[in-house]
Each structure stands twice: as structure tokens, then as C-alpha cells.
Amino acid sequence: MNSIRIPILKVGNVLIASIQVALHDASAVQFKDDLLEKIHTTKSRAVIIDLTAIDVVDSFIGRMIADIAAMSGLMGARVVLTGLQPAVAITLVELGLELPNVLTALNLEKGLELMQKQEQLAQEDESGYDTF
Image (cartoon, rainbow, N blue to C red):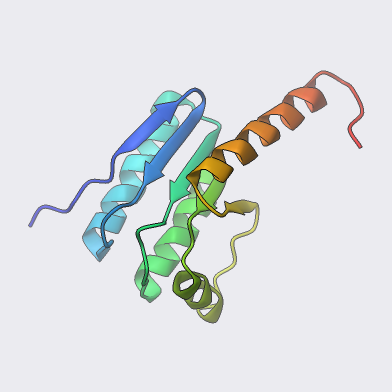
């Protein structure tokens, strides 16, 4: 059985994956593998995962989302989750999943704005200027 592949777009130094279908175990694992490979090959420093179309997650998919965020972070990519539906947020919290160092935004547009601000702050830090 072929799993559905989630498209991953590169915009500047940011990878964007907008999940528009219900994730099943096989498609979630495929997405994780594809995303990590894309981070490696493009050397992207940021990942936005848009979950707007996902309205329900089970424990496996919830853990997979947390794992993808953690693995991306280990590879040096900041992660922003966008479009979390209330039921998904509730499930992630009830499962006890923590997402340290993961930013969230209301939608993809806000996620892109957040990434731009983060990149600006990182550049200011590298320039040696104090940031307050």
C-alpha cells in the first residue's frame, strides 16, 4: 500500500509543509523521513508545519508530530506549528506531549511572519549588537 506523500516546499531558507490530508501511521512516518531528508539536503534553518486541515490526531500521530519537531530541532531547524485546531491542541496536551523550542502560530501567514522575525533576531545576535 502506497502512503500519501506530503509536499514540502522550500521558500528562501524555510521549508513549508502544509498537511492537507488525514495522516495515517504510514504517511506520518513517510512525512518524517521526507522532511528530515529535505532539511539535510537543503540545509534549511526553519520548518513550518501547517496542520490547519488536521482536525483529529491519535496518540501515534501526536507522538509523531512531537518527534518530527524534536528531530528537526536537533538538525538545527527552528520549528513553527501553524493552524492547530482546538481538538488537536487538546489531544496533544492530554497525551502529555511537550513541544519545547517549538513556536506556534494561528495560521501559515502568521507562521511566516514569526519566522521572519526570528531570522531578524538571529542576524542581530550574530552582528554583535545587544538585543533587549
